[in-house]
Amino acid sequence: MTVVDSRGPDPGQSPNGGSAVEDVDWDAAERSSLAQGTLVAAGVDGPTAPIGSTMSSVGSSVESAVVDLGAGRGPTWLDAWLDANAHRVVGWRRHIHAYPELSRAEHETTSFLVERLTKVGLRPRVLPIGTGLVCDIGGDGSPGQRTVALRADIDALPLSEATGLPYASTVDGVAHACGHDAHTTVVLGAALALAAAPSLPGRVRLIFQPAEEVMPGGALDVLASGALDDVDRIFGLHCDPRLLVGQIGTRVGAITSASDLLELRLTSPGGHTSRPHLTADLVHALGTAITGLPTLLSRRVDPRTGTVLTWGAVHAGEAPNAIPQDGVLTGTLRTGDRGTWAKLEPLVHELVHSLLSPLGVGFDLQHRRGVPPVVNDSESTELLRAGVVAGLGEAALTSTPQSSGGEDFGWYLEHVPGSFARLGVHSGVGRVKDLHQPTFAMDERALFVGIRALVNTALAALER
Image 1: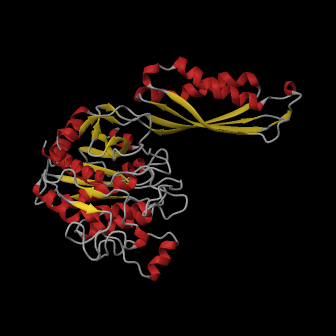
Image 2: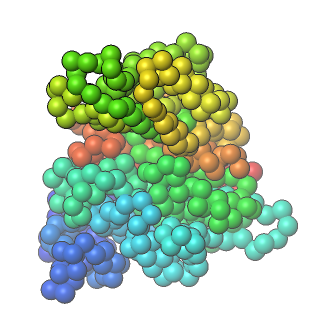
Image 3: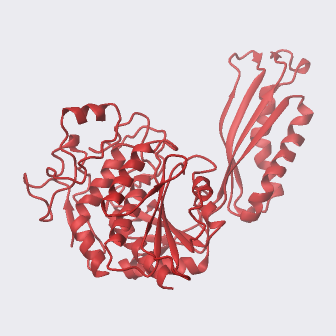
């Protein structure tokens, strides 16, 4: 069983008998570059000190140990690779976590990945937009040969981390609070393990995608690059703090929802609050839209589709006795049904017009199409389940409900079949620390669970 002891071993002694976790023994120049927010990749794979002794303890963890829950389940070459590289896997994740980058600015993360893939003889191709990459493993181009894609998103969120972890974000106002550091590490680990396999029954394409956190998502950049043109199936995982570590939640059909952004701007001549009848009462109109639009949608859309409009921000006015001249209302519109999503934009415009036209205000609605629901096909999901069972056992499989959250993996499934699953990251101790929160944290044992699941899923799909 592979264990990385994050309590810190004796000086010079790795916790599993090999080299210690790959934190960098920084010199003064490198520390200076870190202080400026620069990702220093050099040395992360080189000789290092024990966990917690360098990089301001970036290599330490709240967990007492990082254990490979699937150790010994095979294939033999995968067991051997994980046994030899478990410390690297943990080190990669903590390094990426400490140096997060926002959507479409993931330059250093991309360089970090390119360096690691190139070291084992692979030939990654950076996307035309300058961040994110595609890389192939195996395959000889023979007719009928299958190609299976594994995807990870690599961007972080614009929020400040509050976990208190020794390897917490070093970048002010930016944090990996959605688990993309784990997704990236899992696919990187799966890639290097597959590259070490004696042979592969086809080609595996790695997609390290930028900009998942912004709509309509970096998946469109991947598609525009042609990266899915010859892919037969695609698979991905997403951290889920509602599931225990060691579990993977699967679902046939829609597993996420479509998500759009609405921005409604109102204008009025303005006036004194003592004379609302002589102007257009903009604040009253905003209130009408806030309550009226969700109500009308609930009467025009089948409730079984899970369609929900939620306003997130409203801004208007400054003085209590002045009717403002402008205001803005923003929110998200979500639905679990692909067909309904296609019809929502004209319907929302119709309802806004009917609500606000009688009130005399000017209005402009920007309906920004976001992402479609992720709809897993049954055959791909069965292949993923077979991979989970092969790599982790039947007990690792669990079901998962459809989420009302959006995920641009749905764009891929508009073009090729595939399946997206939930990766359990909760240790079972303490309260759940949710995604998109400053306190989000994960059990790092999930890294090895994810690698085993994706490697075995890729093999199952190639051999089908």
